Image (cartoon, rainbow, N blue to C red):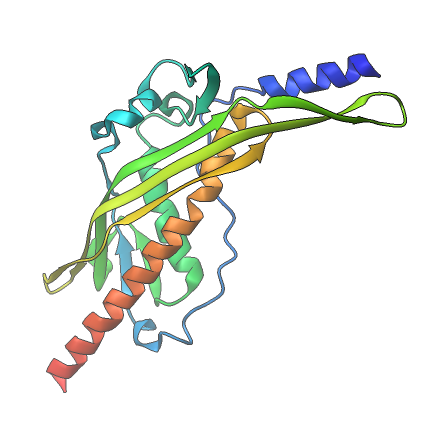
Length: 231
């Protein structure tokens, strides 16, 4: 039994390497159309955001050959670029933004990278999409009835997600800039450090939800001003 537990712990710690990780998270947003009726006839498009992640010195490790590094005697995994589809990380993030806004239901339509058919379209840049997970520490608790210790796998995880240079462009040519989104946190987590990809995927939802809310509120104001001019 002790041998089986040891092998299981080794497997969890090692994890499995996955090539071409898909960037996604579950969507369960409730419709917000009732509270933002001004958007019910608006067609929105999300353009593919620019990618400026390489400009961040502290995120350079994402683009190295290895997704693991050692710091202060502790081993970490990051969401390495090499394990995603080549050159498609920011494309997938942009697509996730469009899907999220569509699920919220405030706009008549939300398209992706088809601005010619939209009343407004959104542009921006992804400055940071960084997830980091520490290799877990094995700590033993009280013995079970079978005489084997209870094994706990604890580690530290943190993330940084930043969208910047955000603009809404109207079909009339009007351009409005709105605030950057900057999300970061550090927390206790469990399991192999190779689970960093699922970890950062789930953390993407909150900053995208904040971005979606900002987009909706900004366009509500634009629509109100537009209606004042036409009345």
